[in-house]
Image (cartoon, rainbow, N blue to C red; front, side, top):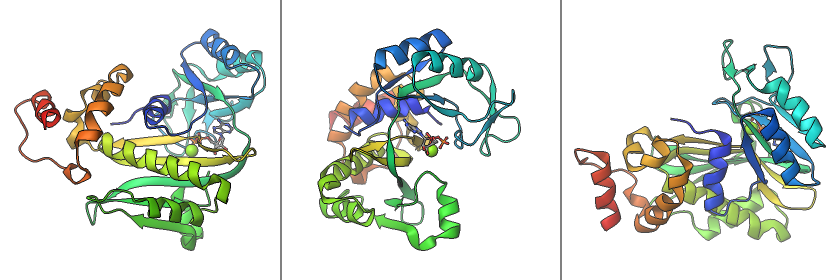
Amino acid sequence: MNVHEYQARELLQKFDVATTRGKVALTVDEAEQIARELGDVGLVVKAQIHAGGRGKGTFRNGFKGGVHVRKTPAEVREVAAKMLGQILVTHQTGPAGRVVNKLLVAESAEIAREIYFAVLLDRATAAPIIVASTEGGVEIETVAAKFPEKIIREPIDPLAGLQPFQTRKLAKQLGFESSQLKNASKLFEGLYRTFIAFDCSMVEVNPLVVTSKGEVVALDVKFNFDDNALYRHRSTRSRSVKAWPQLYRTGWKHRLPGERRWSGHGDDGHHQVLRWRAR
Ligand code: ADP
Ligand code: MG
């Protein structure tokens, strides 16, 4: 199962992961309105499809790019009109492409540096692992092929969770300056918590950026969920974001990281969730 970028961002915000301000638009009017509400800032318009490679994708109508930086609400409207209802083809969609029915309109970031950061379930050890690289903004497979030495791997003990010494180590390896270490560590911690709370098999941030002002922000995020655990997350299964705050409040605090995998399912998933909360 997948969620769109705009939904993933809402989840991350619950865990204090820094993202840019923004909202989803279904029409050109909404896109323009959101841009106005964001105020006098740089703007970005992003196609919401269940596939990556949007930035370098091309629409069937010939329009290039599923991610566009613009300056004014009028320009946002103009670019939204070229994207909404159109088919976007990226190297991840296959030749058929995907119809763009939603756009994320957000504040743009002045990017100084792009980093790759992901929390994955390492199938070999059945434990989480962080994979990161200073070479963000490109696909990790490409980095792995060209510069294998630039890929950092940090296995996590599922019982102990992500430890402060590990977040500090990662932040240093990723070249964060001392003034940014605290924010970077907080962001890594938030991503790890999100991963655990929602039974993700992957939380991938690409790029995680350092802005020209030195802020650390998750600009693009992709989640993969462990489908076997979906019964515990009725709200994510129904893709309703409204119920998520409740889920995370009752969820991750009461569950040890070692309890990722449950055996002995109840007859219906909801019953299982109640038992889990009661502990
Ligand atoms: P995809 O991975 O599907 O191509 P991204 O969200 O990673 O989509 O966007 C592609 C590129 O567009 C990013 O690597 C980044 O350089 C740029 N970008 C994305 N979001 C923003 C933003 N809010 N502000 C400025 N640039 C952005
Ligand atoms: Mg990306």
